[in-house]
Length: 235
Image (cartoon, rainbow, N blue to C red):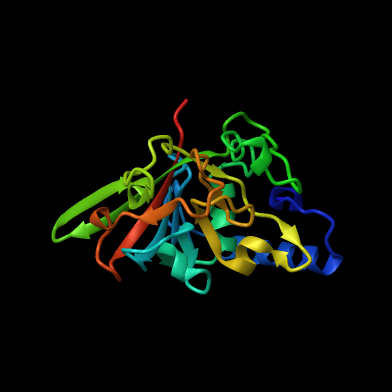
């Protein structure tokens, strides 16, 4: 796992060394629990299916949002779900499950005038290796319920979930003088375009911070434990 995976830019040697140390320490905490399954800080990784399961809880039911998942020390006032698992551990888990962090797809539907000038789309080494599916699972009595995480968000214009969010982009955040920004800001899954989050929406309107609100009818009660499940996009 190289610093290139974290999209290192022109940053200080100290920031690079700190990020490298955090990644190495996270890898050292990895535990093998069966022939194909691993555990890292509460995350379950299936090496065979490439499924990654992240424990989380419902933070908000009704609010304008920019995120669907953040760390519990992150922007919790703008996110439906929070987790105690560090973004660094989630980054490591996704890389170990053979996903490749790359920005390709984040700007596809962004008008030229709205595109950021400080970074460009970059493809993964293997085509579509940065595309993932994200679902949320929780218990209702003895029943297990599972829905796409996109069902937790709606357009303010349509009052419906986006129809073009069947998959997400694992862009993997980046390094600057503050260190690994995903860890520094606690941003994990963003519906509003955020290069610092680990995962971003490629949906139409992802550049608009005024477009997204939660969809309370589809979200469990505040405090409900949930599991965020990441799987590969099938070819």
